[in-house]
Length: 97
Image (cartoon, rainbow, N blue to C red):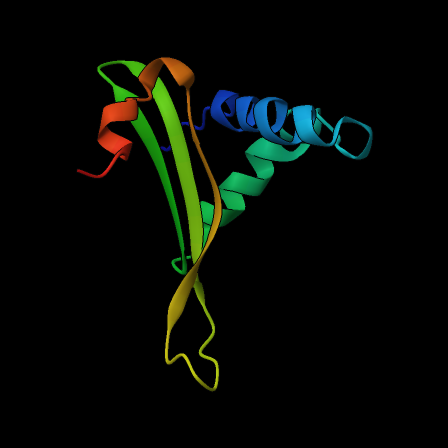
């Protein structure tokens, strides 16, 4: 059985859309539909859903899906959402030397 933890998706909405587009964003979307939505993603082999952990603590998530081929791109993927909690972000790992 797969256990879903929607806290990372809640945090993504609150951090990203909630601060940038508060009037146009339903911040309760993950609470209202998140479990059913991500369960449906897990049921489709064309999707990828990853939960990042630091020991037993959720550090973030990533979800994406295979993209249909286009005329100029034979195959690809669509990144749907990605979130890493601030406490787990490492600015040094994101910089290039």
